[in-house]
Length: 213
Ligand SMILES: NC(=O)c1ccc[n+]([C@@H]2O[C@H](COP(=O)([O-])OP(=O)(O)OC[C@H]3O[C@@H](n4cnc5c(N)ncnc54)[C@H](OP(=O)(O)O)[C@@H]3O)[C@@H](O)[C@H]2O)c1
Image 1: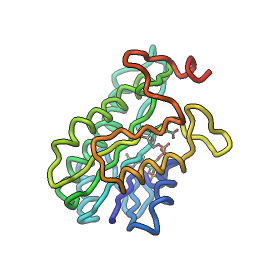
Image 2: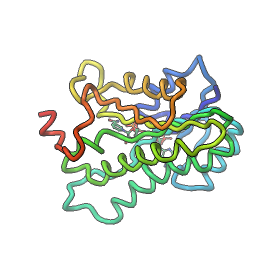
Image 3: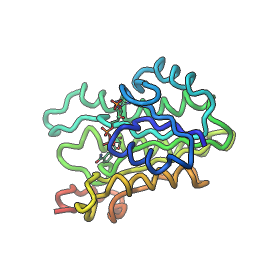
């Protein structure tokens, strides 16, 4: 498969590349680094990237620095807008602008995060956007045409091997979920790389400090 990895040089992106290279034709995309550079907040830049790539079979979006972490009391409109334009709109844009160039039965894999369900006091401008991406995938997958699939990986905090525990994962473990999302045949799924944490009962939003100590 010809696979675009946007955010390829990042913490998770590097391991996603390692897990897929050799088996697939990888195109590394980043803001400054990669085979092709692209700013996913800019539609022209994203269109240029798709033009350079041509037809492709899969796109994995794993771009970082995509939301603001601050105490709730000091968050302002700009902070929420920053995350919305990146974590939500940037990823939605990849699907919208990439659709004409992806092959029949191709697949998009986006990234959200466990802060949607395990918030902390500094994650209020992040968690809701993770939930929005999960819902976008869930709602949009069934209406995509030509057999195109759409999935999302929701990582827990990424740590080095040896530091793992409940609610913690390594980048390598997380990468496997992206591989499954690409190489599987399912669509509309949220793949939770949550280090053993379960989906909380609806409405039971507890802070990570309560759950994880
Ligand atoms: N790491 C974690 O613990 C964790 C936990 C839960 C969820 N997540 C989510 O997983 C995703 C990836 O996280 P990460 O920690 O692996 O990220 P990261 O290491 O900060 O990733 C940085 C990557 O994003 C690219 N990038 C940054 N801004 C860009 C832009 N405007 N347009 C295009 N590319 C851009 C960078 O390109 P250049 O190198 O070229 O600048 C680089 O390849 C994020 O959505 C994050 O919220 C991460």
